[in-house]
Amino acid sequence: MTYALIDNATVTAVQRATGAVAVKTSDTINGDLCALEKFLQGNLFYDDLLCIDNYKPEHRDSRKQQFPYLRFLAPSEFGLEEVDAVAQKEAASIRPEIRGGEFVDEDFSALLEQLKMNMVCTWDQASSVYYLTMRMLGYRGSEEYSKYSALSAAIFAELSDAGETRGRWSKDVKLVSSDGHVFSKSEFSESSRGDYGGPTRQLEMFVASLNWLAYKSIYYSTAAKHLKADSFIHPIRHAYQVHWMKKVGAFGHDFTARLLANLADKTRTSISEIQSHGATQTVALDLPLFSAWLTQSTGSVSNAIEAARQLRNEGHFVTMRETLKAIRIAFDEQGIASGNKRITKLMDDVDKICGDLRRSYGVRSPQGIEGSFLIKTASSVTSLFGVSLPDRDFALSTPEFMKSESTKAFTTVVKDITKELTSMERLGGLRDLMAKSFRIEGEDHGGPKVQEPRFRYVKSGWQKPM
Image 1: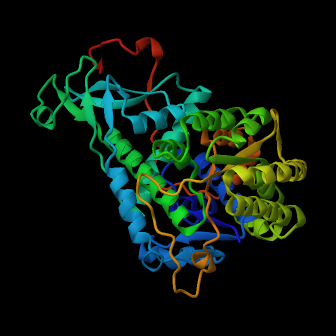
Image 2: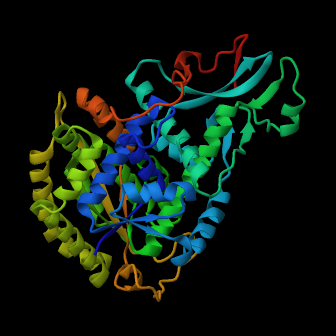
Image 3: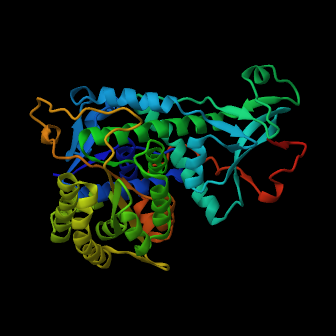
């Protein structure tokens, strides 16, 4: 059996896409549609879908009714409190720092760079006091602006998850001016006309969202290893997950660089290059956007999900699941290096199946068939950030995977949300059909503020560079 661990943020995104849960801004729609695609891929390519049942009690029954095929796991029954403690401790070590208007700490700086979010912070005047304000470095109305809006909305949406599940988040951030002055909270509390008043609430919530995103990425990555499943987290969390896997030594630096380049370029040569790199191996799937084809064929996202549950029983999908299972067994029985020899033989089958799937389920845009590129990685790492989670046998009747000791390789799935957002936007009218069930309860905030590059370091009566 193969298992995909779906995070609660993805389940909520699917609920928003079906209209079961409302959204506060239309900027979150494309990010939720990316999560929907990931959810459908889990349904099509894995034998069983797992979800940790730590959502608010008043919402749990409705989620189980909407998704009866998900296997909900009670944290207390499967040793997940230990996973949570480890994740919270690791997340607490993150020290956000904004220096000269940019994040410079190793965690969030790397995250924003990977997401291609050209973000700057400036001191903007309000009521005669200057507050540190987040802005996009670019131009309103550009393609980059649309992508930045969707990414920032997806990050802010993390706080809705924080409101529904327990965990760790913090809005604390170290602020340092370009000349090296470290701002203190006492400076801001005593501010008067013309002084600095600290970060805006929006910036504070952005930092809190990043902290929650990091914590949940660590939590689900570690939980997936503990449960011997592949982590299928919300696409916005993948960017931090890749950074964290490199940080803790599960991914080597060179491997991470190749992986990110591969996600960006989708070239077969780079796929083959990163397949055999030290203790980590990869399998790449160049897939169509199943969510688009299924919605077009059935008329709604809800119908598309039901259709996917039926489609998973057809030949190509059964064969793909069996092939991916054979690859996993090769890793487990022969180790990463030896297993890769068998993978080479199986990859031809994977490529042929992906080609057939694109021809059968691909939806064309003016740029060609829009795709969803998914990379499955397997690592021989046995511990994460120096803490080994024990591989126990649990005296429980279900699920059976908890009793198995055969799964040794730590596997995860990686996607590039920036590419997925572009593919979604290119669908045009079909994207609108996919978005028709979203219920917006609230007012759109008008998009993020913009700082044109030529004014990046210009001082005016109402704004100062940091």
